[in-house]
Amino acid sequence: MRVKSHAEWASKLVGKMYLYGITSKMLAEKVGYTAPYISMLLNGKKPITEETKSKLFNAVAELGKGA
Image (cartoon, rainbow, N blue to C red):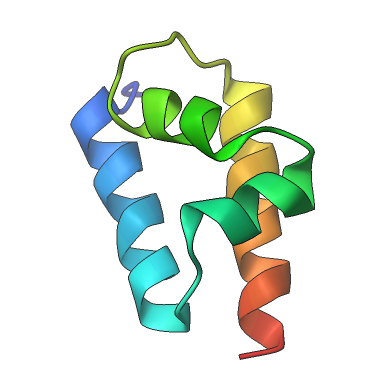
């Protein structure tokens, strides 16, 4: 299985956020992080685990249901 590059997963997540009107602040509150930390993850400034990626995608999916 090919590991997705940072740009691939981050752009997919940001696209879903845009589609559902979810801000970094909203996502941060949902997962218990700060908005600046979410920004650092999305911009590749901090390393991210597969578990955290999954947590972010699940949170966006949950927030998107209310959109």
